[in-house]
Length: 212
Ligand SMILES: Nc1nc2c(ncn2[C@@H]2O[C@H](COP(=O)(O)OP(=O)(O)OP(=O)(O)O)[C@@H](O)[C@H]2O)c(=O)[nH]1
Ligand SMILES: [Mg+2]
Image 1 (cartoon, rainbow, N blue to C red):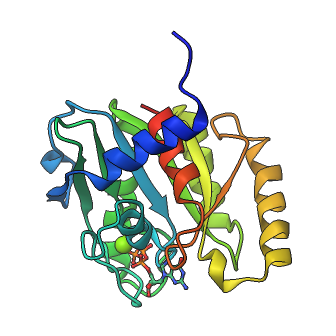
Image 2 (image 1 turned 90 degrees about the horizontal axis):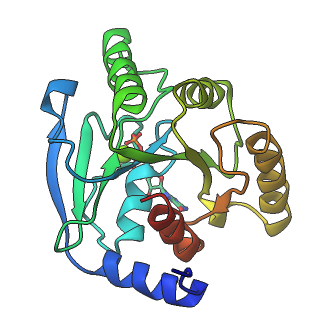
C-alpha cells in the first residue's frame, strides 16, 4: 500500500486531533500508569519549556493540560486519550532541570521520568522540547543519552519560536539539528513550534502520526 500524500496525512491528523481528546489520569508513580494497551507519545523537556502548552495547542484545547509561568507546574505523568475509538495517548511529563524545587522532589521526578521513558513498551516516541531562546543544555543532553541508550526514538522540537527573530530561530534550528544528526535514536530533523502562533502544528501532528 502506498503512503497517503502529505496534505491528506495532514488533514487526517487534524481530524484526529480536533476530535475527541480527553484527560485519562495522572500518575504520580509508575504503579499508577494506565494499562499499556495503546501507543503513547510523550512530551518531555526542561521545566517551563512549554510541554503542557504545546499539548493544548496541538489538540486545540486551551485548558486540557495545566500550564503556568511557575516552573514545576506539571508534577505527575498526565495521560490524554486521543480518538474515538482510541488511537493513541499523549503524555504530559514533569519537567527536568528545575533547580529551585526541593531535592527530594527533583529526585522523585527524575526517577519517574527516567523510568517511564526507559521502560515503557508502548512508548512510540518522545518529543523532547527545547526552548528556541536557549537551545540544548546539559540536562537535555543527559536525557538524549538516556533515550539513545534505551533505543527510544525521539524528535527534538523547538518551542516558543515567537520569542526569537527569524535569523535566531534558523541558527538554533541548525545547531539543534547538527546535534540530532549525530544521535542514534534521534530523528534528524527538528520541528520549530509556537503555542502562541500555532507555528509547526502540522509537522508536529505528522510526527506523532508517523510514530504510531
Ligand atoms: N510566548 C510563548 N510562551 C509560551 C509558549 N509555550 C509556552 N509558553 C509559556 O511558557 C510558560 C510555561 O509553559 P508550560 O506549558 O506550563 O510549560 P511546561 O513545560 O509544561 O512546564 P512544567 O510543567 O513546569 O515543566 C507559560 O507561561 C506559557 O504561557 C510559546 O510558544 N510562546
Ligand atoms: Mg507542564
